Length: 473
Ligand code: BG6
Image (cartoon, rainbow, N blue to C red):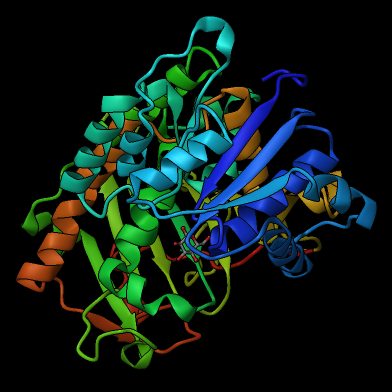
């Protein structure tokens, strides 16, 4: 992308939720910050019957609700002129012909849409570029993910495809790489010799809200673990790439996924826990006898020299106590308990907490001598909060980063076809075993709690404990 090249963006499904909540506010904020090309045109394509003006009004109302930034009417008016709407059906070739007349050389999201547009024509070198940004689901299983990829690759090269996992757009998720590889102090201890285990929590306070119909066919493992949690795991576990580019980074992530022990039904029974919140079956559009899990816990092992024997515990759920996403690296206990301790107390382990949200930051917990005692220790925190160091509004919406990267042709923060398939390869046997063998049994939990009984947790059964605590302000 250069600032002066005219750039056209087509949003398919433009009358839907994502466009109004995330995509258009993100493009608008990038435009305000002068990060988009000057000559940008955004065309919304959708089923709803909007005029350009109605479309703009619909998005303007969305901004009141969803924009996480302040803007002036003048800025909006400048941007609004760049917005247009084209009504059409995704299966109708004629509608696409009309769209093509409206705008030449269009990329799109759905494989059938890609076919209809005939993106196979290669652009001449001086004619610019075409890229397709795709939002999930890239599934809901390995077979369909393969099918998507096959269809996509019939008309596009992999380097034209930008598959979004919005977790990768979060500053704190990108900061995992910076914490590890822009410092020298962590890497020497980032392995099985020093790390006892890794905990990855993505907890949500909300239930399924208005998405009951979709969620009931998908469940927590496909909705959150296959993508977001496995992405977090790969960033924590990967080897240092030789350079900060899309190929090197994604190669390392794929290596991590391929080193995770595959799941057999016996391993699913041993290494997973599933639960559903009470009242879920009465949510709108949810089946009355649904056995869809809204909470899951997984214990995974990455079988390579760095991680052999170190459990990665992953958990995610809806309707939990609070919204909290964090990665806790728990280090091993000191080899010798040199300081005298009351018999009921154990030496605390050091923790490195990568706080993804809502209190973005990093903190390190270590032991200090309690003053005015002979040899008592207390756990204390060294804390970094983004809000304190960079200001309360420093963190942009994750879609901003991703959309800008897609405009600039940087695919580092997008998932590659093989990565998506590898992740489904891990998840498929879990979902299948849950469905066909009903193992492990579906537990229940009360909304507003941390999930099923703590004693059932795989991590707790291993003699460990979950860390809930956020860094104190
Ligand atoms: C989406 C899931 O991918 O991520 C939703 O489909 C979930 O079910 C959302 O609520 C969570 O994203 P965030 O950024 O709020 O943690």
